[in-house]
Image (tube, rainbow, N blue to C red):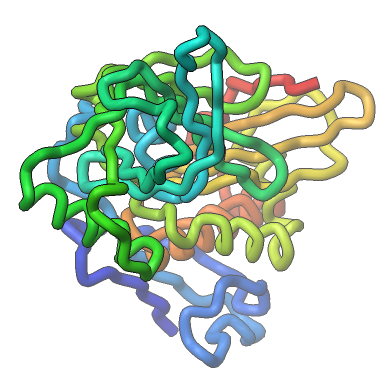
Length: 314
């Protein structure tokens, strides 16, 4: 039986052939599980990939800070807007926001926010909690601006309505002109600066809208596979008692590892090819899971390089 997952937006496909035990549980692409058989069959996995070049020209196993920043802003809806008051005190308030196609934050401020004057230097800090294990952050430095162009104001009003389903007075809409961005992977991490041009040209991760649900599904239903990934795809010198996925993106996934002797670690496992949709992500996970099982059972010889970079958390 052939299981094939494809996307209508796929630019090219990477086909992987792997021998699987059909009794093994995987993601269900259809209502019936085609794997519930006794004997081995061949699974053809079609992974959605992107053939066109993007602004991220360098080969990497993880998204660049500009892309992570755009993803945080796309998924976030609440942030902290800060500025200096006339008395010289730093002041931060919670605000809702939306973003346009270039990641420009759109704010709705009322008369009580008069301390946030136009052209005053301000910052907008946004956090994204990832399955309770990590909190990447994005801080935009810029100034509050009031677009004078009527067409632009209508566009921002439309963006706000699409995000929150409510009409607002256009006189209350403002934007934060992005001059610089600080991106942090988590608390206590060293941030990385992103230029305004890199931020605007970056694309948010295509898996962002279903990443959290997919991670929760894997951690709940495929915990054995996640632990096996540690032993097969990562070069570890310690025993792992528990492992969980933190997040998944177009280039791979991050895992949190617990060792009773060594402590807590984080490791990044890349995909064999970039994926651009949910079907591609699930297909890739199925194939990687099957290969890890075969390697563990000595049915296959690993022909890949293990991940050596492991970050200790505590």
